[in-house]
Image (cartoon, rainbow, N blue to C red; front, side, top):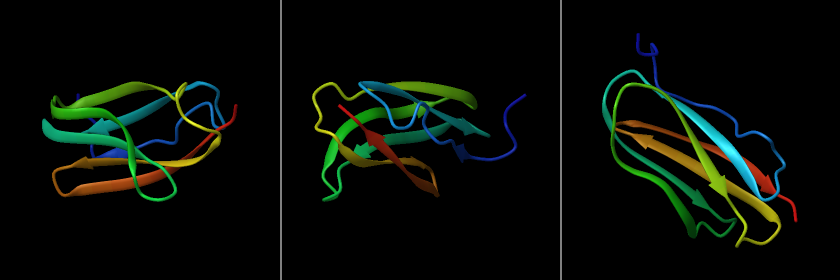
Length: 90
């Protein structure tokens, strides 16, 4: 049974080095964009881009090439948009 609503969960572990897991839920099949941005708003990674089936999903983010700092990840699925913060420690 699909989840009742769209949801973006906090990544774990957080802070992380060098990788972390991001979970999200979709109540229906949706075009999904899951991206990571730096403090200046520049996109540093695209984790998901395309059609995703309804259900619970998990994506691993490897930040080996990024500097220590605070980043933001954004899930966009149809009209739903949510942003959360993550911290990379080296």
